[in-house]
Length: 312
Image (tube, rainbow, N blue to C red; front, side, top):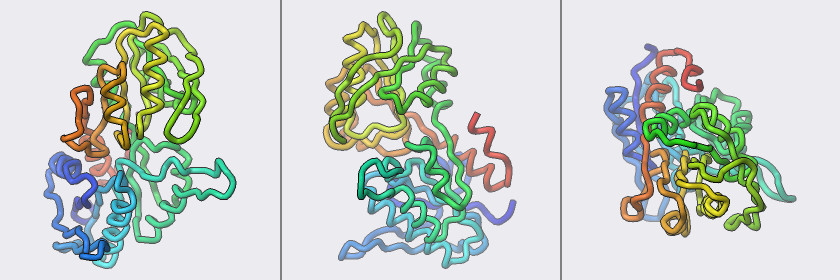
């Protein structure tokens, strides 16, 4: 092993960092990550990292800008402390939906974030279920893109749901839904919708047989839950029986929790890539941990072994 492995965390998801460290049988590194009185991020690494292989666990989930700045400043601090290699472990990559110019005079913020991470001094990026796979091409440093599909599929296989159909809540999620359907041995359905704005979507029609079937709606993230709740309502009207959801990243902003609670979704299964406030959590939400997935990837990167086996 080249250099001792060190795990550090910002304030975005310290519990996930602890789980990853436990999987790897190493302690979480000591670091002060707070703010000055005027709101500027303050970082101090409180142990020696010279020559070490450092992994910073920090999803850029809400508050996105604060968490992103923490990550950038931690990377800079590690670089100036002479860490041998710095890997940004971003279970959730914020700004991923701004990956192209879909309107005149708008930025490609995902590319900007990629540039910021590289300039700050990151040597490698480890992330999971990007909203748009082409974001991998925005980086000129190595990026490992993991998928939560195995974690989700293992869970649903244990439930032994009969007459199962995997549904995508929109046309853009077909590839992901197909991967789930193949692993679960289920048929595929697509909810074709027209988006009104960034908060509302109007369901148009359903492609595939869903009448008398149990449905698992899969998607990479849910923000306001408008799309997925509209999709579940349309599937129910089309004769679907029980409806489940498998979502990699529970952003859950605005009225999302309330919408999910009032929807026809029986179980809303998510990963712990983003922490959910326990005060807002409802019984329908089931959280699966991806600590083992991320931990295994970190171990393989550290040992200079292939990570591709985790993509299968």
